[in-house]
Length: 251
Image (cartoon, rainbow, N blue to C red):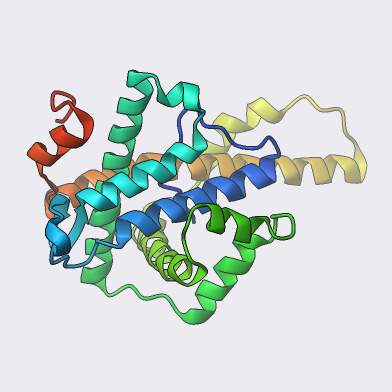
């Protein structure tokens, strides 16, 4: 189960190939994590950099947030980022994502989630598999992030994914009623014999994935709200106002 917590808006500028698009979004997610997670564990606020978001022992500093915003802007056109509404929406997106990440890290700390080196290597191979030769390394280079640092933060990202998988896996199942409700959307094909059997199996698998995805999204929203009560998020509103110029959109 993978939950990609970086959600880019409609102005996101990503190459058109579906497989490459998915991998680039995945890489951007890890790059964003690399900025924010640098300050996510017991920060001592060196160089006078104050906290912006805090949950338990996990912290995001003002500098972490600014760096994450600059990386997230890579996915948007310059014209889109000149729009105050788009810029403001992106600030809020990153704030929400960072807050959720801190909550997940606190949960991982409590339930002792770990990731092995072999799991990290497998994830790296998977991410790099759809990139043209040299493109993966060039993306890191253009973002001024070293491979060693990226790999370290990828491991933290995998920890968060494992938390989601462990906590939500036991809550989700695709019942026959769920399958029936969606299967009608795939009916109507004229198949017979072995073709009909293969078609039916393919439809069932797609329907099952759709049901599972929908239930996962619904369960995640409920679950993260429960964790927010357990691990309260503290936002430095004074620093937030300095960064964004507004406070009225915070709830």
